[in-house]
Length: 162
Image 1: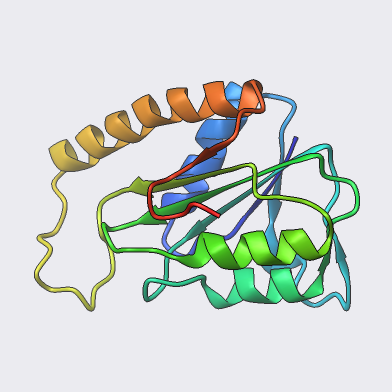
Image 2 (image 1 turned 90 degrees about the vertical axis):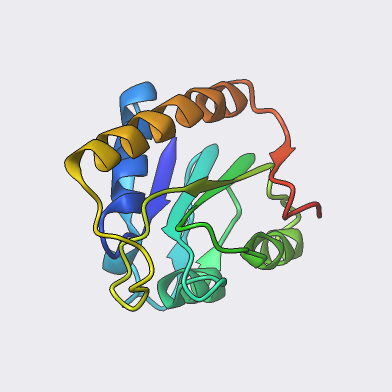
């Protein structure tokens, strides 16, 4: 499996590494290292995207990846968005791009994690106990995600049905 990830503060990197523990053959591919290419060939039979939600939408590096990417080899594609609890409709955009290549977004997940955006002063600074609790909850949720990916099941979060 190839897991393409973008992480600004570390939440999405944490998720990517946790998935790699569950699927040891997984290659972690940082999207930021690919963006200077004219064309980005997305390779692998099973391909995942892991990224944070920015402003309730896709972060710019994910948008650029979608613009430059070719999707010829994947047979199963999933996406995991990390968030501080915001609404997200970006899975629809990913699905539209994949449809142009005759592919589909087979599974999508939104993981709520601690919000670490300094613009939102309404969220308290996370304590070590809160961080440990959040990590435990994410790991538990990743057990379900692992099951979906391993079985190549179709699954979409409630915010994405398309």
